[in-house]
Amino acid sequence: MKAEQGEAGEMAPPPWPARLTGPCVAPLLVVAFGLLCGRLFRLIDRYSVNVLFWDQWDLFDAFFEDASAWELFRWGHGPHRQGIAFLLTRALMDATAWNSRAEAFMIGALVALAAALALLLRRRLFGALTPMDVAILLLVLTPAQYGIFIHTPNASHGAAPLLLLVALCWASTLSHRVVRCAALVVLDFLLVHTGFGIVAGAITPVLLVSECIEAWRDEGARAARWPASCVVLSLAALGFFLVGYSFDPAVDDFGFPSPQAPLYPRYVALMLANVLGVQGTGLLPTLTGFAALAALLCAAAVHGLGLFSRRGAARRHSAVIFALVAFGLLYCASTAIGRITLGLQAAQSTRYVPLIVPAFLGLYLQLQTVRSLHARVLASCLAVAVMAAATFPVRTADARFMAILARDKQRWVDAYVETGSLRVADERAHRRIYPHPPEQTRLEEKLAYLRRHRLNLFAKRPRPVEAPRQHDAATAPMEGAE
Image 1 (cartoon, rainbow, N blue to C red):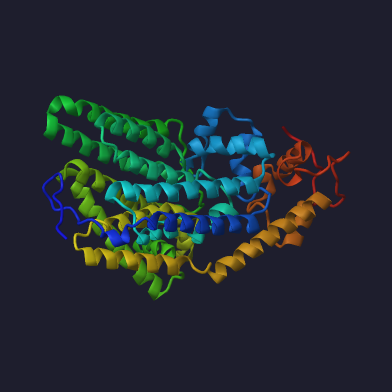
Image 2: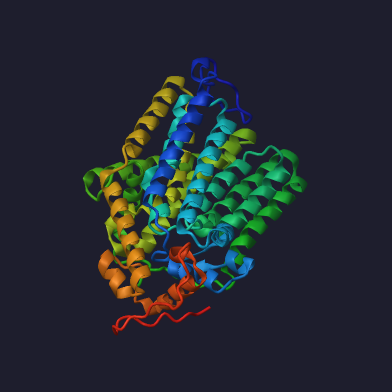
């Protein structure tokens, strides 16, 4: 099959043969999407519990204080702001009496949207879909990210940035330069302010600089004015993020560089290995992770250079792959710097997974640029096999932890509703609902507020005539505070 000529003169990869892009492919992928979404939502339904947990007690200060929409958008928690997803969370909480299970389902819906958009992005970039593109669905809908739904739900942390990043990549493919650059600036502003989407603040200006250079080459200096203005706006978005910003690393012993700095690369490798289903800190996860890291670095270098050496559609393809891979790599690097003191085992936290997924999505799209059809088919099939092995079945250890966590949360809820005692609830559940001393977040006051307004764990329960009081010294009276 003869390869086609690209816009910049390089040879484009040959199209897929008709037998791999027939009319049965779309229904097959739709069925796979439905089944994988069904599995994800079943996990959420089975293991999520309607109670605020850990960081949520601090994060929801914004709701306890009835913050305005702008305050919610700019709300800081840990090293990032909450952004646009926090507005969605507030609307959902108001509609569901602060139901944590509803929040978990919303996060699942955001991930599902990201998966669908990623699949359409693949089609937009490289034409007709093939059965091997199920690898994208397996990757984005992986159960390895269960912590973002079941442990401490926060749409702003990972799910919303993932969706916004894929949307930014889609915007990079728009044919009209003015619209394309404007969309990049808007999505960049939302990303920078939404969770760890802040990483995009270092990527979007590079994409816009390449737009500026291409416009200059093709149409002269005048055509480059608009992309150049957008470069300034993207940098201004990052600067605006810093206005009133207070850095909180969320670990007590953070330092840079850390005494454990030599372990940064291995930490990153273990983060990558976890997405591929290789758990642990031993030799196999380390080697697997370093192999993935090498491939990602090569893809980032090739398409980083392609931003400035290619033109037209070829440059836009490089923009997408570079943005995805660079985002994942920068997130991994920043996480290693911020969390190395927690130990190497912390590298495989489930909450990191949706923010590492873009790197592997970019790597899969890189496979679609292989010019040898046989090599491309083989590589794509290998990607499907790897992701299927990584996501089926749900890891035994993960399933066990989800079941134990759900059981303990429900025991805590039942005990607290019955007794009004933090001490008794902690003892019966063998788990604390908040990791620090309760006074640090005014936990008793917040629980009293939830009880009085019948929110969260108290929703759909009869309003008590008098809040239960305990006679032991460990339990304070249920005084409300609005």
